[in-house]
Each structure stands twice: as C-alpha cells, then as structure tokens.
Length: 98
Image 1 (cartoon, one colour):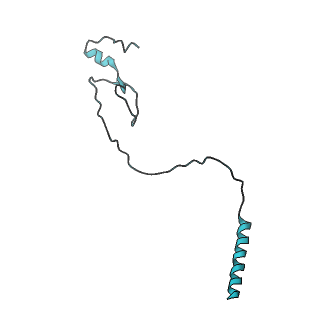
Image 2 (tube, rainbow, N blue to C red):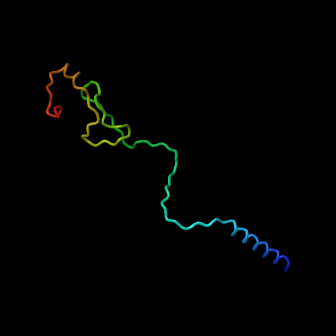
Image 3 (cartoon, rainbow, N blue to C red):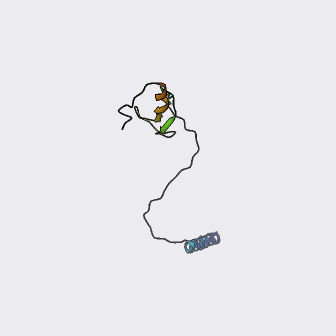
C-alpha cells in the first residue's frame, strides 16, 4: 500500500515539474478586445407604409435608401416638374426657386 502512495506521489511530482517547464510566461497587459458575433436570422418591419404620388412624372431625386427611417414631412423623392407643367398651367413656386 505504501508503495502505491509513493508511486502516485512521484508520478504527480513528475507531471507538475514537466507542466511548469512547458508553460510560457507573459507580463499582464490591459487592452481592449473586439467582440463580434455572427448570427443568421430574418428581420421584418413592424410597421410599413405605402407611398404614392399625387401627380405622375419622372423621378428626379431620391433622398433615402431602402430600410432608412423617414420622418413625417421629410421629402423622400422629387419628381421632374417639366412633364407635369406641359399638361397643366404651372408657374414656379417659391420653394422650387430655392
């Protein structure tokens, strides 16, 4: 029985000595580590709106991108008024002269 304890103690001490010789040592440093997570999923809007124009014409300017949040009253696109002016009598408004 004593022989078993002595063999076990020698084996443990040999493993401990071997483990300490193989470990690399480095000084402690404070640094920021970037964390990122990659996930897959489906994202759907909770609220959607349909936008329509009161007049027809060519789109001259688009002021948003798909998925952008827009506020009430925000101009999201401009229509070329030249085609509309041919059909009706229109004069330049104060806002279009700016």
